[in-house]
Amino acid sequence: MSNAPANSAEPSIALPVLALVFFALFWPIGVVLAIVSMVKFHSAKGTTARTLAIVALVMNLLLPIPICGIGAAIAIPNFVKFQCRSKQSEAKGNLKALYVHEEVNRAEVDSYSTDPKAIEFTPKGQTLRYTYTILSATKDAFSAEARGTGDMDGDLWTIDEKNALTNVSNSCER
Image (cartoon, rainbow, N blue to C red; front, side, top):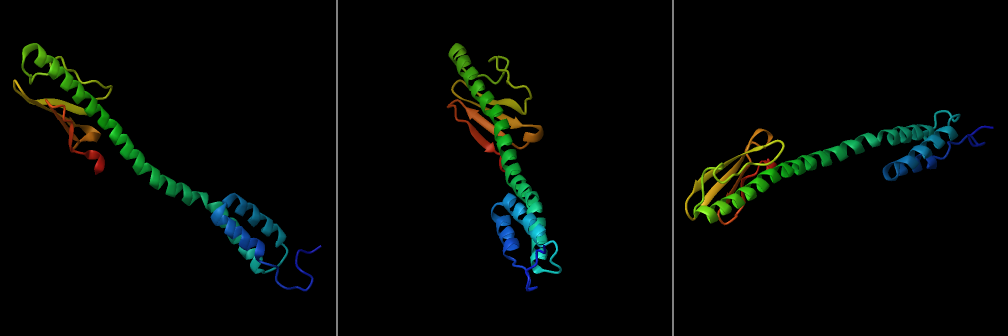
């Protein structure tokens, strides 16, 4: 039994068109419809329906590739920014700890110090991405910075006696 209509008119292109519509909306259903239309119009020679079914099948099978590319193009920059902000938490945490050490030292000797060893400050972290420097210290004020190194080069954080933590230069926004 032939799949072509008895009056030798062209087969209906409704099924392949439906496969193309589902390609845009629900690609797995589009693949199934394209395969069904390929089988249905297999023996019909030179029909638009068969050609359209082939196009629908190819488009449905290739659709996941650009979707993955678009997803990666959106996700990777966001991940890199998130990772950078995560690395900045080292600077923020260590500068807050330095502030506490300076306040303890001020309570004991009535002055801030420029020597990290004198206030018993040691930066914490498995991989230190910042260098910590106490820029100035007097009886009433101090200023310290965390300067990024390596992949955080260009990132600069400061803290003072008022516990004002400031991101002077943000390498995450490059």
